[in-house]
Amino acid sequence: MIMCSKLNHRTEEITYEGLLRGNKDWVAATLQEDPQFFERLSAGQKPPVLWIGCSDSRVPANQITNTNPGDIFVHRNIANVVVHTDMNLLSVLDYAVNVLEVEHVIVCGHYGCGGVQAAMGNKQFGIIDNWLRNIKDTYRLHYHELDLITNDTKRFDKLVEFNVIEGVFNLTKTSIIQNRWADGKKLGIHGWVYSLDTGLIKDLEVTTESNDHISAVFKMDRPKQEQH
Ligand SMILES: [Zn+2]
Image (cartoon, rainbow, N blue to C red; front, top):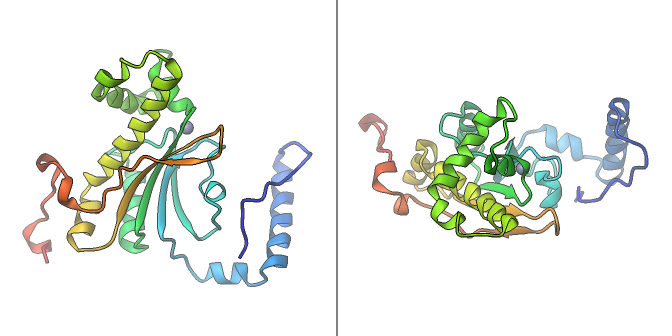
């Protein structure tokens, strides 16, 4: 079993050509360890997990969970935001849940997230301001608690957590997830936060595994002909 957690102690700077050289080195090292690796993976994928994480280069899903190619289906965007109108995310979610039949969906944020930090401020950054406004909405939902935290770092950390929790909550509002649960399929939606300082993941313990606790207003009844 290959572990991809090993660090590449490279001395040269990252260059375009270096990426292609790195690829060849990685293929050679992988084949040496597991000659059937690519043959096996090329036959298809059956990952048990969908990861919704931040685009931040320091939070790669496979490495920080010590998993391999083929283990995790991944969607990343700036600040791991889950928005109802994001067709990219909804397509990934639908495919992961209904075709790949993943049993876990993990929203993983990270402390020190630049996107969340920008959402806490008032500076304009361009188009991204519109994306990050979703996090400002989350701040508004929880301002009673957030505004009481006088330490800036702690308030920042708390908003990172609320952004993940809101992501988990938003996933449970989708008909994709609700129909899966209505069909009696095993599916857990989880919220995690990764620490850049320690490398450790904190489980926010907001795992949701059924339609039981969804507020009435967010429950999505299927059209009659689709019920079974
Ligand atoms: Zn981030």
